[in-house]
Length: 388
Image (cartoon, rainbow, N blue to C red; front, side, top):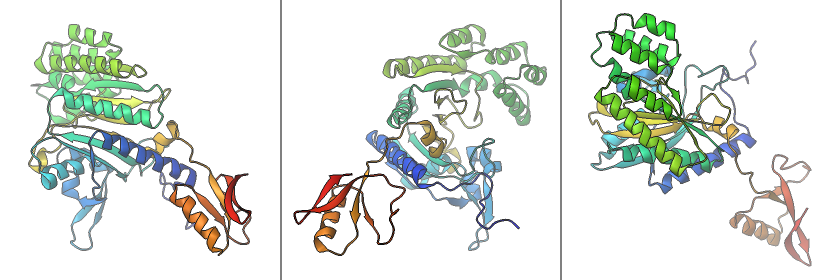
């Protein structure tokens, strides 16, 4: 018989030490976004399925838990990503004419983990800017993402960039169906040259050569020079390479501690992104901690197609393990008593931001999980704080 207290696979409790770090990180990230003028929104955990999976949200179908609403009888889903919800809020609830900046932080639920040791309940933080089609919005979002990484202590991160317009430009006008395109994109993502060659045997030599070149186009700025020489001269591709060069130059000037690279075969979210895209990695890590880019079509299904750029932290719990989080200030230990002067002293300390642990009678190990470096003692009739 299975123990009642066992949790489902890839679902875990967050214990005090980690929870303290995650909450500190959540507040820090929201403060950084607030300093840029991003307003906090809190989308619901559950929505009607057709809303959650509309438009670009269809890519989330297999990752979305589905259940029946007992009130309406309609199928609802547990959100697997917050970006479509934020796009709905921008399109239908706020309905502003100008630029809108929104941020959010909340749990997601996935049917399957992202990897062998991944969680099915990530805590996602993200920020989106709607209403500006120029590269200035892309620059702002990258700045915000890197400032967020710095604020939580991520040292010497790597920024990898790509652009969805490159592959879209290569495949524009190609007479193959959507499943075939999806297979081509998967071969690019896996950098599987043999499979890519097989899948593209029916395409023109120019397109086949361009797709094969993408597998070799990763590294520093030389990648962009090679791409300009070997990829077809098409408007979308030329614009993408121009923008990537400008974004890379900006990041190197503003964030000299960040290592900038390009991977033009990185096509994750091909059906989702419409322009530049990026990922932030910690040193020595193969998994991105932050991902973002431009996705101008995200709000089209809600009847209001607006330019949109944003990023999200894949999982705050994972980021808390990779980044430096300041230790909380040590607490003050105090005896428990109903003496008015003692209780007043404890209240004053707490009002001034101190943590005070009143040791309950009969429990010598009370406050075991909190470090105390001072104690409240009575001296000459007054309650004073002394070092332990």
